[in-house]
Length: 414
Image 1 (cartoon, rainbow, N blue to C red):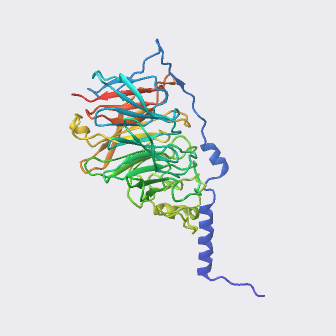
Image 2: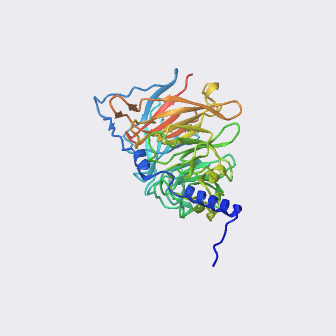
């Protein structure tokens, strides 16, 4: 049989196929991947007893900080009722506490347990006299005053690498639930639900997948004037000290934000193992695209981050400063983000609260420190790790610390 001669078009097609196959293979050689890996840094947690060194808190001029409650174990996420009661989930203890300041001195003097026995309870949202609580696989509704529990949603994906579910109510009245990835870098078996933000009607019905390509968006909130939804996403680990950055995303319905193949402004992750053919591009589509393509082509179809923070900062809660609660006008409409802090980085980052400045048209344009002092870099001593944020009716900002077991209360200049 005579050999088959390839036409120029056929040769070009073969070359394109080879290039696509190369793009689908491991982008970096193994030795380069190994050099990018870093070891955990070691930090010492500060003592909390008498004689322990006090943290050196730094806040903008006029802001005041005090300990609202202590000896709470591992407090995580927060929300407040209209009467000023602060509700806090304790994931490790499996319960929810209610804290009140009855004498107005800025410290909780009344504590009760709202509900017990909710393994992995994390997210919390006050709504119409009840608390909606998110554990790994279930959304619960519990009367804020205590009482029986009701299952609103069951069958959420199990914990995996990111079991901490969040739940918030949007301006549309729907419940928005974040479901992190099961892994650091993979093509998920569950393309429908993993790495997404999902919303439900208040009764737990009518599920809709809002956005995907989100590795773990724990902190998200709506701008008080534009009502645009913004969220902070965690970048992948083990890419070195500086990559990939943490992302602030303008979360739009139907958008894909790129994880695990790309990050920031659609940059291809040079260490990803996930082939585009095994990824679902469209939120709500459980079926991978099934078509081999270069990673750069896949990333071009995703939504870029609007702003980035240093890699491994670990953003947790995010709350916009509300209007009309006593904060200076220049702060209203800006966002505050709790950065719990890094663990796989040579030099630790995070361990603070930052302010994200939003311009007059509702877009972010800068990030600056708001509360520091959780980490003494010189000694390597950690004075806590911030996690949850909530504003009280009087404008006070509450901050949970799941490492030293405290909740702080910050008041703006008056």
